[in-house]
Image (tube, rainbow, N blue to C red; front, top):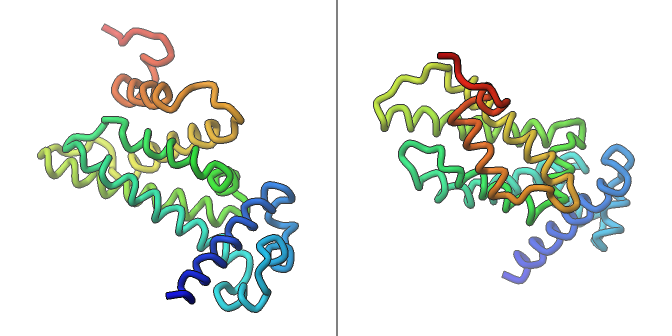
Length: 198
């Protein structure tokens, strides 16, 4: 039990050091020694858990995705049809709590691998949910669920990156979600100020 706690503490310290240092210097400039010094963890401890700094970043990203998935599950299950805005609101709240980690992932640090992991995981989960909703509601999607999921996730992540990069967001999370719901339900044409053609 004590070893498990020690392992978790070391991993948390290494992950926190990685995030801090990437924000300060960028991922490319970092060495394992920089990370272990900042974390106050021995290099041998680092290598007992990770192959290299890329492996650490991938693990930190996987942990972020797992935590996000746990938080989104109740919000997604809350509606048979969807389009409640609850999952997006929960993602924004999570991003506010883990702002620095989201910033480095969404910026594409680490040769973009953590960003690809994040986008692919979100798109995969979204496509599965779109398919399940269509089946539950006996509807046939007009657009391929994979493509629809990529568009949906791409829009959300672009907004999410813009939102977390602001020191003080210009819009509260609830307002961002309301606008995204309007966009999803009414479309870009309406959102741009035009009336639908008669």
